[in-house]
Length: 205
Image (cartoon, rainbow, N blue to C red; front, side, top):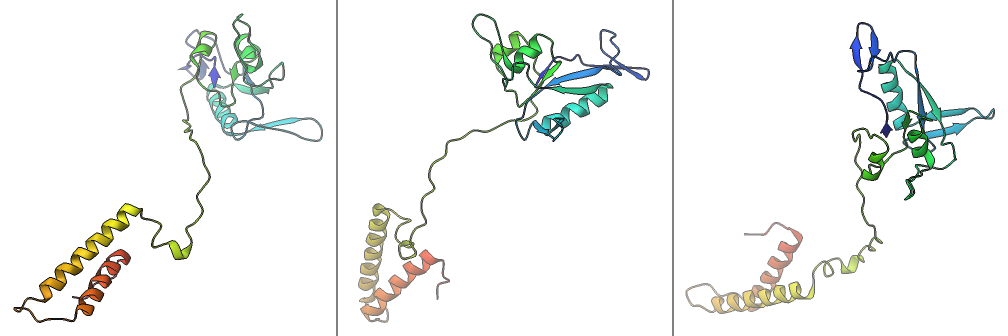
């Protein structure tokens, strides 16, 4: 929001500005336009406008604390936030703030250093995060779920590791100091161990 209010201090039971201006009972002219959810402007069948939204509620709280009555207005020229041009002219809600048509301009105003030359800005009350978007990849077919998550190099490394394990166990199985097992059982046991590790199955000891 672009605010043009001085910070008030409390003197007795009246709210006054640092310059001695009594704020109680005054009208706070607020410029805004329909930009939900920050400012929501609705018109009923009689042409009466109603105002709501995040910033409208915030301004009403601030105005009440200052003893002010908020009065909402649309930009005089019907434009939105407004720009400052090279020749020094401006338009939109920003021009209304500069020329004193309204006291406060709001509608999710972004902070730009160029605007600070002609208006004052309040502290930030929210931050926004922007990003890029792209098409979401399609789900992997069920029959490819075991293969697709890994690349070719990963599978080659797994197969090489599996082959090395089988060769080691087969050669180790031929030693006379250990009971010999059929090579088929050694191979099936190695395959079962690798598959079990991939699927997080509990291994038999």
